[in-house]
Length: 329
Image 1 (cartoon, helix red, strand yellow):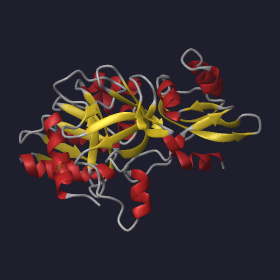
Image 2 (tube, helix red, strand yellow; image 1 turned 180 degrees about the horizontal axis):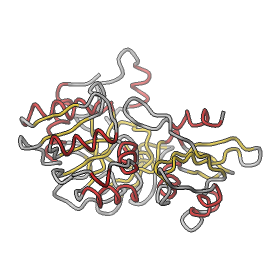
Image 3 (tube, one colour; image 1 turned 135 degrees about the horizontal axis):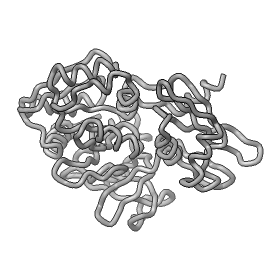
Image 4 (spheres, helix red, strand yellow; image 1 turned 60 degrees about the vertical axis):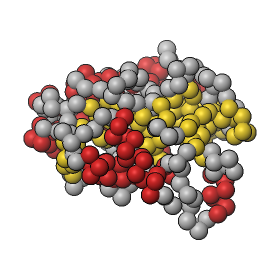
């Protein structure tokens, strides 16, 4: 359940951080029933911008529409950018009209962010949000340094902190991973008809659990480590799939990657990388694992690799890690 205040403030704050105005033409292929719809569509009405809606996402069509519509802003999820980077039409695409791009929904490897920025010539701002916040909770902005790997700062009027996983009342020092907590007028009123879930999510003092493991640096930038529920336990060690994905994604033959767990009698769980290769490239399981060696501790490296034609995704383009095991059938 959302308040009108949360819906209004989220759109207003997001457009202010991104300096979106009536001069912007925003191209969007994200579903409007999702919170992206609240922020992008309502924000468009608020500032008098132009919103171009695509019926569905297609990498080649999207690249062509950016050029045809002279789009200044494109909002997407990591898989969209990965697919556009791997599309054969990219070298011919004219992206010169773009001013900024944003990415959210899941963490995006810094290597892929840099690749898109190099090709488009504009900053790719990483954002983070939840349905429970009516949209964004944190964001990088156009008038400050864009830090790859960081989800930026808390939106105006919103507080954020990193809490101890076993005691949400304890705020951890900078650099230590814990649960990202949010407080302020963007926080939902609760889950409709489910008081127990509401009490479990929102503390009596108003701090809301996000379920994301994150850190904060000394300048106040937040960094998502991974979803708490996606954690892989390997021989008593915590392994975060997103950390492995960032490393594997830097391999030149990799278009997309997602990491899931497979059962193991000795270690309990092991990490497995599911890789979509770029068209016209090749790689072996041994090459992908060897690529990880200099960057990951031994217990964090994927123990196996599956090369797949695609990854299971939601309607918003997020990779469904829990469905990765279906690719083993």
